[in-house]
Amino acid sequence: MDDNSLIQVQFMDLWTSCQSLLETLSLVDVQQFLTRVAAQAASWNLDADKASCEADRLRLLLLVARELHPLPARLDRQLAALPGSNELARALHEAAQIMPHKLVETHWELVRKAAARYHIPSKVENEAEFQELQSVGREALFRAAQKYYKKPRGSFKGFAWPLIRESMREEQARRHPVPFKIRKKLAALGALREEAHLRELTFSKEEIRTRLKLSPEEFHELLQIEAVWGNGLEFETDVELEDIEAPDQRLDQLSMLLEIEDQRRLDHAMDRMIDPEKTLIARLYFEEKTLREVAEEMQLSLPSFKKLHKKALGEMKRLLNRG
Image (cartoon, rainbow, N blue to C red; front, side):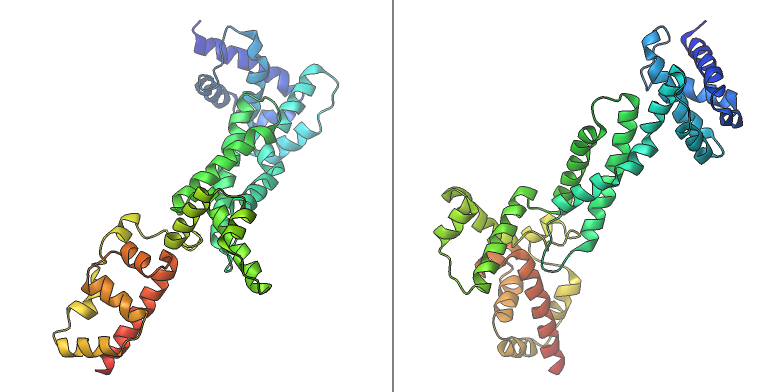
């Protein structure tokens, strides 16, 4: 008898024993069940020759039975109502408590807590980002539940939390060019400045550095990052990072300038523009500097620069339309 056949025989024996306690298992097609568990035994690392796999076989039996059951909620209710009269009943009840769907149902709060921890609220609350973090966390929670059910060890919270945390960190890294720890520091710096403004106080750089508990080198680097990225929260993730390193050559923004044949109209419009919009247009389009170069020269964060850029283009269009 090959291993695949031996595994099916072992599961058939276990199935018969479980059916004596759970009559609802009769609703599951046995042959389909045996085919499925034999196929999944390899991924569970079940060895047909090892009796020590009995607990693993029992968990796999419940998992496949629920997947194939036409009324899974009924199976759940019978599992919950199992009497602890014998060893198999107790083992079934314990395995039922850590089935993936059960773990997910009872540990949603982990996702909310992790999202709250890794979401940095701004003055304009970004609810979409918070929801996205929760979505990523839910996927990680489900994956953690599946892994834990195969080989339970320790508490599920302790097992799942690092996976949820890492998935959210990866999502933050994908969405933001500024690392999470730096954005936390930028948020603290912004909060300190807000406090000074509300209390009508003036903090020296040294006082700010001391209150943030940063070394001179760390504080200098933080100010440099802030000069380019602002608080790191408003960065538009649909813009490729390479775009900020090259002159803006998109036709939708340059057409109004490059397609104007009347240079006198263009000069007249530029004369009527005022700073800082005028400086931005001149450096970005006529001097062909990059977004980053102009932002640094004007001492603006990129999010603030992008807002000013949009405003400047709108003003240029208005002036050109007036002739």
